Amino acid sequence: MTMTVPATTFSSTRNVKSDPRGTGPGVPGELTSSVTVWDVLSLPVLRRAQIEVLAAHENLDRVIRWVHVAESPRAGKLLSGGELLLTTGIGLGPDDATLRDQIDQFARAGAAALLVELGMCWDELPEVVRRECEKHNLPLLVTHRELRFITVTEEIHARILNEQFARISAMRDVSESFWALMFNGAPPEQLVVHASRQLGCPVVLEDLSHRVVYYAEGHELPSELLAGWERKSRFWAVDNRHQGLIAEPIQVQDPEDPQVTWEFIDIQAQGSHWGRLYYRGVTDNPAGGAHVLRHAAMALAIERLGSGTPNSWNGLIDRVSLNRLISNRFTTVDGERIVLEAAGFPTRGRQLLAMDIRFHGQQIEAEQVRRVLESAAPRSFALASTSPEHPDRVSCAWTLTPDADLRARCQQLAERLKGLAPRISVVFSSELTGPVDLSSALHQVKQADFLATTRGVHLFTVSRDRIDGLMHSLRGDVRVQAFADSTLEPLILHDDRHGTDLLPTLEAILRFPASRSAAADALHLSRTALYSRIATIERLLRVDLSDGGSQFTLALAVRARA
Image 1 (spheres, rainbow, N blue to C red):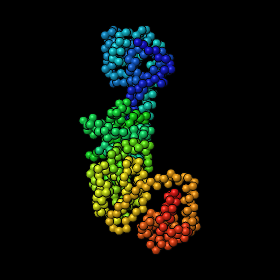
Image 2 (cartoon, rainbow, N blue to C red):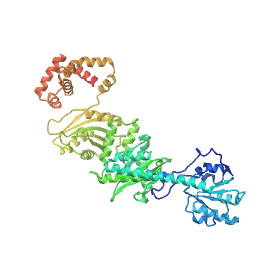
Image 3 (cartoon, helix red, strand yellow):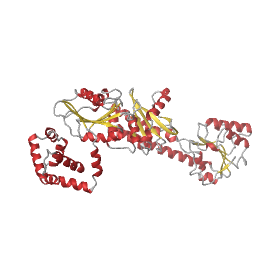
């Protein structure tokens, strides 16, 4: 079978099975190439010479590393693999046996293809040459017009060398960018995001328990990227256990989709091992995926060595997971579950609690709070992160088994917290059925203003009040807006004109209708000052704040305006 090559067929029909830039060596001095036999067929000089493919059509995706003229009986012994061999046939041998031996040497040496110019030595190609090339799966090309070997060599070598120069330049850029990040003390999440941008692929950082520490999803949905993560990660770990620590990136197939490849490397230094870094797919970066992954792993290892808590990723996992919950960075409930579970926080068939723990003027490490939470109930898991606005407050999410007695566990938690600070308020929301409820409840407990007025640990439950959802849905109704503004207008005008805080005072009074002391503490006022403000509010609104009906009306107006 022969294949004549039309002049316009080689721009879109390449079928490259692998990407040498994504998986090839990362040593700057080693010459690599992505120029294939397909690329060579599209060269104008070869099309003018009427190029034709006679054998091994299925191997036209072979990479050409160099071009070599084979006009000597010793040519096969001088090859090192990946060469496009150019010949007129003069030096290949006078008989069939010699020709068979020569082609056998070319194939065993790893030649990329054999190109024969007809007309000088052979007017017709000897059949033995075609048969032997087919036998060894060596692509055989012939030209029917005169071909200048020097022109072919120059064009192909120029392409290969230009690629090499671009690759070396790209490798330098990657190295310099990671060194700059390390020099400036970039946090792990910034290093992961930078690696993803350099690769143009999703990147996942995991710890030694196969929990996802951080990820940069690129154009992927996080739920698809991380689906079944622990199972896949453990499979890869077991499958490559014989290799020990992975110091050079290796490529693996996704067990759920063999068409998808991942490449990963261990993060290690000075005898410590912190986890693994993965990227999914094939990169277009000329530096190569292995080079980018090596530098990213090195930067993460250096970050760990300089970290105040080098042996734990818990702080980053908790901070990022809680931030994503509070910011509602999810498109589906299942997606939220998948991402949380990949980070080691199970939600299916579990009881969930949102908590805000306040230490009233004393800063406590979030890691301490996490340990207390997880020790207060068996098989429980927690996320704990210090609030950036309030260093004495820790936001928490707690997942417990479905049979856990929540009241008993919260009391046990209070006992375990006693030694951390003189006054502690624990504001929590229970009866959560999933991650969406958890996101909402985290907002709710952060906004609650319960205070501990005496020493010890004080527990406050924030219930999910349906009226909040109703008022939220009606907030855009002009009738509700008119009701809220007309009811509260005297206070709003007074505050604007005199710089007072009567409206916040009313909100505090309505939060603590049965305790003027609690309202005064929330406002940081003396009881005398609070009673003075109450008198002014009652005069302006013409109401009695001790009357239940007035409290109800004002509470509706405040919620509608919030």
